[in-house]
Length: 455
Image (tube, rainbow, N blue to C red; front, top):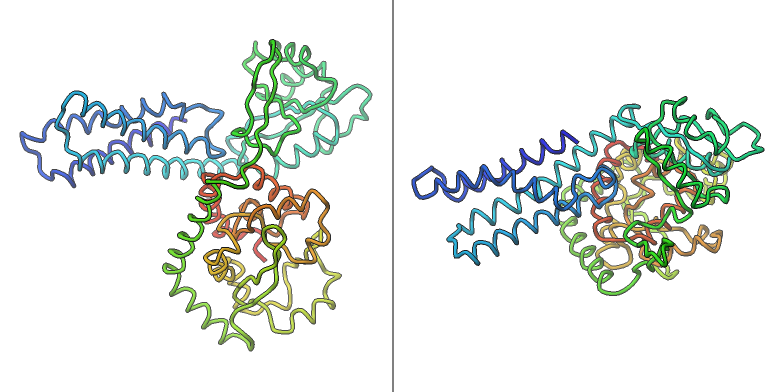
């Protein structure tokens, strides 16, 4: 948090200095007042961020709310300066304002993103973690523990559990500290600073209230995890009815103006990326052609939105007889679902290994995005055989266009179990937003660089 505040102050000062230098250059008696404004801008930015709750701990370091609040603070400062200068008839240099405030806002978002990545890296090393005791039934505790250990960037390290009465005393490799009545004692024994309560009939309103009072004395955080785990906070609101808090869940946005905005964003973004990557596309095409016999592009039928089939384009990474040889190695499948994945697949060409390592084989999918059959961000485009094996709930993935990247890619790609990949795709469909797309695109850059699950 201290580093975040320091970075925000530094960003405000750099943006103000840059605006002064570009707009005025040398210091003169006329523009000395802007030196004072340049000194006040970092403080004004810090105040706007604080008022807009951009330093609220529960919103920071995970999710998109932090970036949205930074953007809101930047807009608020800009609006305040515009309205104030107009109302008070202050002759303010528009060039200075146009440079300083947008640069400060954009740079603040970028530095917070980098700061977040540094924190996530520390958490993956086992640092900056909060010690957590989980209270719930065995299977639910095991499921949550597995998820938090896989997604270490949340910073929650499960160190123990409290189970209902008549439990068998075993819950994976966790230490069981007793029953639900022993949660406060378990926190002291485990040296924990957070308690997560999972949904179960034993925890009613009175039980949770008493537990909250017990934990309040030692300033222990209490988190209640309900069954709406894949519903984003933006879709939920608490509406009290005669003192009873009612959780209202909005329907996901699958059509309308926001979807039109996403389509425009996809096509404009794909067009710009095609222009930017044109030299890379040409170089990869030449490498594929020289490496092995066969076409440069690999075409395959995939299932898109509403179950419509389309041709997906990739750079060829396998030998031309790959499909015929699949039957010979199918028993070596390392996936637990309907997909076939193998780390050292003998059908992959020499160039293909490097293309898959850095996801360069997927660049031709930009033509799919530009043509409207895919999106930059979305669920993974499934094969016909996969869709045929879908359980009923998984067909919800087909409510939106498939994407070049998505939550499945930034969370581990081929290293994920098939059921987990489906769950992530469903989470995306239910909680889509343009800001979430931007965050996933940024996370894709780091996922591709690490190369985790790319085979």
